[in-house]
Length: 415
Ligand code: UDP
Image 1 (cartoon, rainbow, N blue to C red):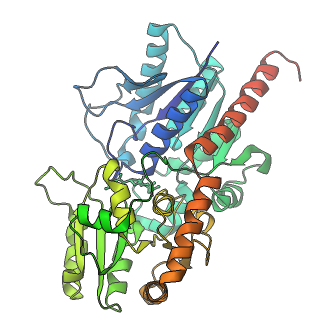
Image 2 (image 1 turned 180 degrees about the vertical axis):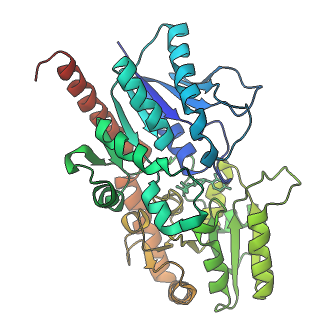
Image 3 (image 1 turned 60 degrees about the vertical axis):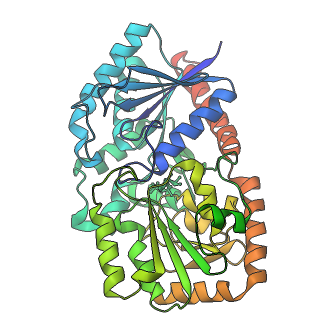
């Protein structure tokens, strides 16, 4: 019999295009992992909060992966900071779905602290074991965002309770594990490090000249790329400031909180545009907006260097995507980036919020064609060896099996 796994991802659905304020790495993670695990013999149901009344209750997304719309609060987009009050309704609607379908699950994989709250309650009510990937931790966010952090203060207590109740906590990188231990006193034997991955059918190296031609980018200029969600913590302003020290370099910025088809303005992009004008570097920048996943390989391949300098980063899938396209990465020496980018071999690490250090690293790489070529080829090898979703899913399968077995032994009083 196939093992049934429920994914809970309250605010991040694989059906939503990533690139906006609350749609990014988690949407990609949930979709890609579900896809790979279904190929390894699991049946996956992804439970996500209904944001759109026209979607059916169940979408057969691919073979053995269904996306279930959970009715909890208004059927519209609500900022994730405001979702906690709807989690009781989320839990009840999940139970109704299981009753309607007459199914249960061998395991729940919760994503983010609110989904983990639901999973913890379902474990108490129905005895289903769960694992959790937090994707971001309340404590860490508080440190960096201070009073800008609008999540309810209960977040940290919920995370602490979840750590005690979970079968295993998945840390995305060594820094994530350290944070779980230092800020939450998480028992080390409850944490397994499993990174994020890249879908190599979707993101791969394309001939640079061809990619530039397709995107109507200059053939011979030096091009650096910033791609991701447009939120202040991603440090896009740091890259714009670094441009003031660079001549003859074009910066492409991909990402926007509004879709390319919309005429609405994105306040964060407006802030960045104003900054670029004030610093007189606006003519060196191309704002490309939110792009679909099938276009990303062209942007990554067209660039000489990919830049990502967030203040902190729980994991960061974009550096992996750039490396998969053979593009060296300059990233800030934080969180998952200092794990995925091998400093000096697949790119360079710099301190965050330091445009001078960033500019110096850019100059160093742009001057040395051989170094960039070598880093690009090392990057592809590193991705293939360590960071494909297939490799991530294999580790996850092993972990699931361990947690399912332990729960079974506990229930049958074999211990
Ligand atoms: N992304 C996208 N289109 C865009 C901008 C971003 O598809 O216009 C994707 C990007 O390729 C990556 C994800 O959004 O897969 C961002 O994930 P990451 O882990 O880097 O950051 P997070 O969103 O988790 O903070």
